[in-house]
Length: 85
Image 1 (cartoon, helix red, strand yellow):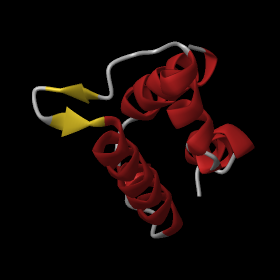
Image 2 (cartoon, rainbow, N blue to C red):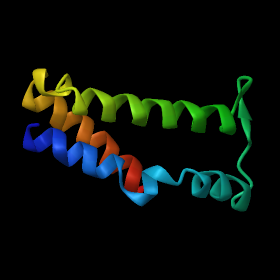
Image 3 (spheres, helix red, strand yellow):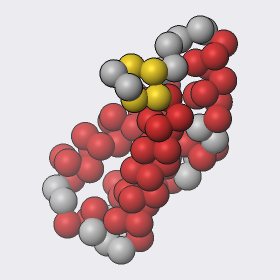
Image 4 (cartoon, rainbow, N blue to C red):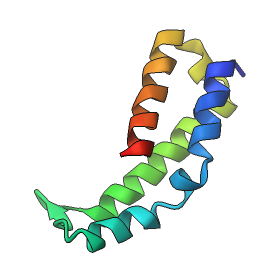
């Protein structure tokens, strides 16, 4: 596993990514709408969990390592942006 892929996996295994319930709680706390274009926050969280698991599996199977360093750096940047927003 390449170092950048490991960094992505470590971030995805971080508590914030494992506990998406906190995202649901923030939606309620800030009174955000729970549905947009017939797509609910619960569906979005399930999709995020699926995507996180998919990326971790692709790292474990060395699939992500076949992509360029820049592609993996871009993915990591998006994940960091999500983590801190």
